[in-house]
Image 1 (cartoon, rainbow, N blue to C red):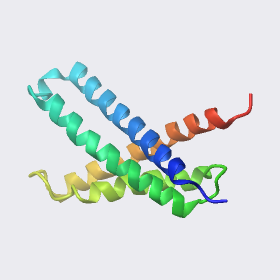
Image 2 (cartoon, rainbow, N blue to C red; image 1 turned 60 degrees about the vertical axis):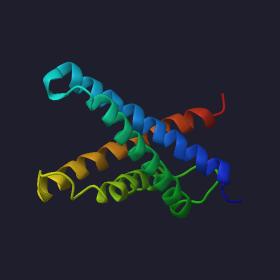
Image 3 (cartoon, rainbow, N blue to C red; image 1 turned 135 degrees about the vertical axis):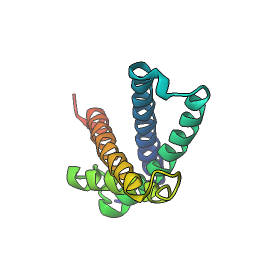
Length: 135
């Protein structure tokens, strides 16, 4: 039995929601620790950019997960973590050339974002397993 479209959309939406919440949390911490680094209006722009990145990464994550581990009972941890890393990497690839920071700085930021995608996947796995564990 294969996963359903509803399950894929749930995976994508849940993963994207965790990604977005984590990104906003990091942004909030930066705002508290170093408030001068955030200009007026940056919060709304950050929410829009991070929201788009979360949705795109979530969709790619669900698609990769379907291909990598089509079992309906749930993915293996190693495959899910690889999908989280790759989903973030694929979305970040489109952003490598922006700004004037240079290629190496952009690659470093992309790697940090990929690590963030792995953390999001760990949270997603924990949430998923807590919902499917018999009580």
